[in-house]
Length: 76
Image: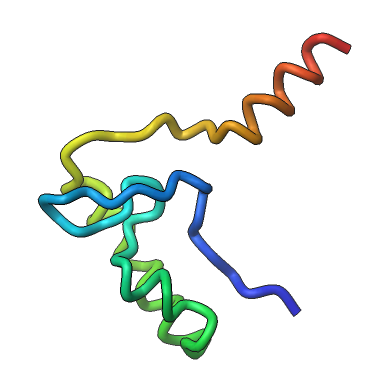
């Protein structure tokens, strides 16, 4: 069984808001994610879009892994 996660592999914390630039979660939420109930995870995920609007800088939404895959597909 897989656990739903908002992680996009951009794991850096905004020092002003304490939210991850990539997903919007706090360090505590990230570290406790696996132990949370599905309902708690869904409640947090519902808050993430608003949180991401408050971070100081935006990361590239394309992760390194996704970029490498895209470049490989374009080359072939």
